[in-house]
Length: 136
Image (cartoon, rainbow, N blue to C red; front, side, top):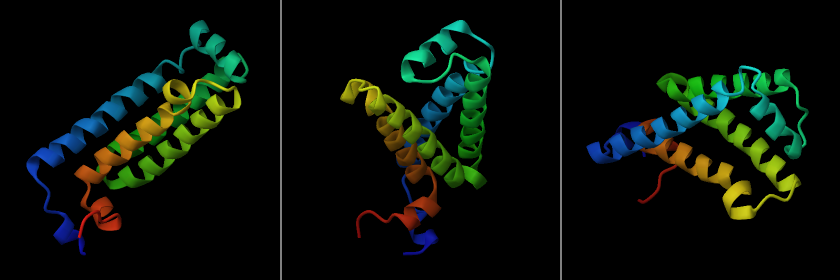
């Protein structure tokens, strides 16, 4: 199946993909932006997760998340951004698993975000649909 064959997607599917991707982008912008200033609430909530209460660590995590999000938002680099965001979510999942957080509400939250992230990209990007052909 070529990219041109998979490029045919309904307008509804395309807009659903854009909305799903937009939700992930907005969430990740919020997540990254609150880590940039030295907010006490951010650094103090990192301690029970096993991270140091250090604003520079929070800032670094925020910058990494924002860069990956920008790459995901830009159509030319969206697949790279999705891969990087998947890795970022994997780190969050590992952190939650390590401290024995509740499975479905906390630990698997990164999985839920990853499904939305890749689902949105699948619906809006013919290259991804060509790479992962569901159906025929």
